[in-house]
Image (cartoon, rainbow, N blue to C red; front, side, top):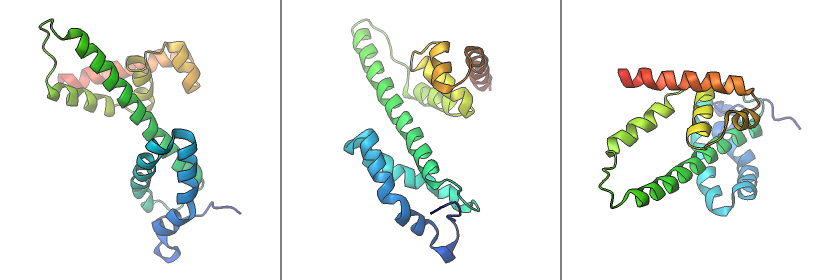
Amino acid sequence: MSHGSDRLGDPGRGGISAFYDRYAAWLKARLVRRYGVQDAEDLFQETWLRVGPYQAAQAVRHPKALLLRIASNLAADLYAGRDRRARCAREVGQLDGWGVEMPAQTDEVLAKQLVLSLPVPLRDVFVLSRFGGLTNTQIGEQLGISPKTVEWRMTKALAHCAAQLRR
């Protein structure tokens, strides 16, 4: 049975409610298997919040793929944030007692906004390099692109950040 014509915004067919009824149990089971019970609930709720903008779309051809893509992007953000916080906590612990002043919270917010303002392909490379500590070759393997493309995207990402800081 194909679900290729699921309309999110069509009230005659139930809209988002029907879409939720059809895929909620499936999505929750997939998230629990993939991410564990603790993270699955947060990812599940946030995924459904993110589906909202698709209500304006005419049809979702691959609804399960859409839901999994949204959830996996959210999980990547979640785990990257945890890794960053853990790394930052370790660094703060190492700097404690050295008289080093930590950047203001506004600097952290600015940095986050800079990263989030990057186009997704550039952001993926930037995050994997700067926060994941991966080499260009490792990033290329993970994203399915050449190391040269990784280098080009990283150069563009850094230029974008620099341009935003000059504003």
